[in-house]
Image (tube, rainbow, N blue to C red; front, side, top):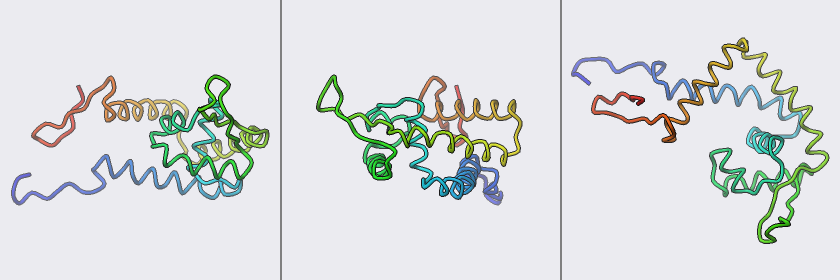
Length: 161
């Protein structure tokens, strides 16, 4: 940065805008999920299992970009709530599978209404939402070192190759 030049405003930083948006989304979900007795992180675990029931803790953690130690307490709490159970794998008795209970499967309908409410509150059309999700996906893969790779050159600006 050249001497005497003002630093960029916080609102011009991608990281801040992603952070602020994430906070606002979580705050939007919080009261709606509270009616279901769920926290936002618990809801994310349920979303993973509604998509693919019977995963292990490690697989759930991977899908959520978390470590197993962060996911285990969420699973235990959801089990105490009666939405999940842990079962031994029939293929490997050492492995535990996390499976939805009947109340856990039934919760999906109520959760779908929450998703619809949040989507409506965002006031964004489907085409714009699809485009936004696509761009966020590219950014996430880039930052994770996926097919689109990011490098930070001497200028300090992120470049995608």
